[in-house]
Image (cartoon, rainbow, N blue to C red; front, side):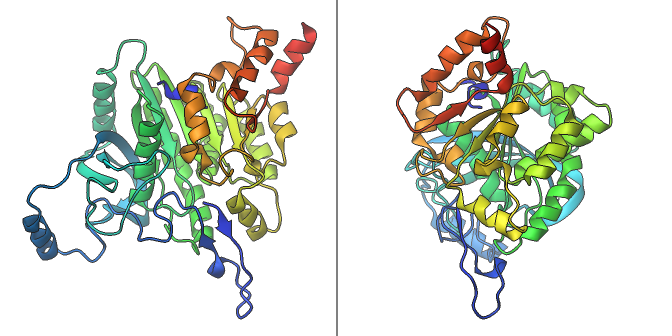
Length: 406
C-alpha cells in the first residue's frame, strides 16, 4: 500500500503536597508497553560486555521475527556507547545517520509496539536485528537511492515519520517500523529522531529540543528532495508536528521551496501546537504541502494536559479549530469517537487500518485533482464512512467552494 493513501493520553492529578503539575503526570496509553520498562534496541541500560556475552552464550536457538522492516534514521541526538540506546537524549549539532533493521515479533498485534527493557525475545518484542551507521549525508542519500531502486519504477516512495514527546530512540524507531508494517506500506521508511528527553516530567526540555531540532529536519527534507523518490509522504505525531512546521517555516523564509513542494502529502496526527503559533507558521510557510490533513480528537487527554501546562491555550489537534484548518485548505479527520480517540490512535486504530487497506482513506478526498471535480470530491468523501459511522471527515474550504460554484 502507498503511504500516500494514509493521510498517550496523559492523566492529570493535582499534587496536594508540591502543587507541581508535571511531577504527577502518568502515561495511560504510551506508544510502547503500558507501565513497563522503556524500549531498548538490544540490551537493558545496565548491560555490560560480560553480561551481554553471557546472555548470548545462553541462547541456543533464538526465535526469529515475523518480518524485518529497515528504518533509515537521521537523528539530531548525540551518539553514545550504550547497549540500549546508541543515540541518547543530548542534542547533536550535526545529524547522525543510520539504518536500523527492526524485527516485528511473531506474536505482534496490529497497532501495538510490544517492548521490554531487557534483551528482547524476537518472538514477543520489537527488536533491532541489525544496525548500520552511515558516514555522512552523501552516504545516507546513496543508501536511500539504492533502496528506492529496489522499488518498481514510478512507485519509488519515501515515508518519513517524525515522533512526538516522551520518546527515546528505540521507542520512536520501533513506532516508525510498526506504522509501516501495520499499514502495509511499500515505501522506504525514513525516521527523523529528535532529542526528546524520553521522560514524562521533561515536557519543557522536549519543547526546547523541538525548537533545536527544526534545522536538522529542514536539512533532512532537503536531502530527501534530492533523492530519486517519486513521492515523499510525511507523517508527524504530537510535538513532532511542531518540529515539522518549524522546519517548513524555516525553509520557506529562506526561499527554499523545493523541499516543501516535493512533499506529496503531509499527515499531522494529534498536533501539539498552540493554535496562535500554528497560524503564524501557516502565514510564513505560505503554501502547505498538498494535500495536508490533520487528525484531531476531543478525547485526546495528552493534548488536554499540554494545553493546561501552557496556560489553557488550545492545541491544533484538540478539535477546537476545525474551521481554521478548513479555511487554510487542510482536510480534517475527527477521530474523537474512533477506537477511543486516544493520543496514539493514528498508529493503533483498527478502523483507520481497515479504511486504508480498502482504499477509503485516500488523498483523493483531501485535494482537488485534474481528474476529479469538486462535486465528485464531495461524493467520494462519503466513502470514508464505509465500515464506521464514527469517523467524521471535514473537507477543505476550497473544495466546498468549488462544489458551490458548480
